[in-house]
Length: 339
View (cartoon, rainbow, N blue to C red):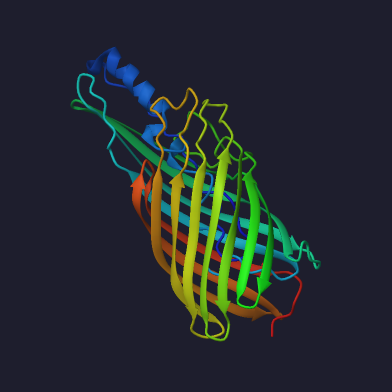
């Protein structure tokens, strides 16, 4: 999951490789073989385990605004609850209905630095995110009159997420380009339902735009990106190329308080592949929308920024669908003094 250096960066959500084990003897060896085949394909959800590298919704208001020169740290708390319906069935002696649910919570920190020098006329920034996550994932299979359930819970460290960005501003308009990725150092085992790391590397690039009229208080932002995933060698599963759009529109009610709406759209461009993707391409899409509130305040002469937003997901195909909550606090450690 990528990270941002300003408003709205969550920890890599805990990643799930949904694997069911066991079967009733009365279902026979054919049913057992079917379960193994289906569950090895990650419960029919696009992107292995139903979760992409990119955590949708991590960019929101003021996303493309250049950061102030100097050191900073962005603290994030993230919560998610979602489900995959039992919508995938295969007829062998009866119907095999699969379903899964996940509950995740995480905290992360992103230290970063913005040099006091322009690069190609813009403000550069480099940083890296890391943190701790908790994940509980449950899944079940139903064959004839027999239901098999399993759940896993894990609390562990995340992958590492480096990021570099370059931002420009002119009047009320701001532009930003970024490059980020996943270094798979977090807790991951292919046999677990619950994971915090995703088990493979990824790279993500994109750009954003922010319009901010300080006098009128109007603001809107959008960030568009593309993710390329390397193969998970533990499972021989390669996620397809993903696209994602994070957006927000808000109004500053005062110099400190901001109120608005935020959302995101995720759309998978190419199919999953590899021998582990035994259920086929499973391209996916999803969208979400929800309220956003922001607060800016000075501490020791520095401008801190807090942001809280909640999302309700919809239009989900081959992905978990539920609710997400982001809380972030950006703390400058040096640079321009707030007035």
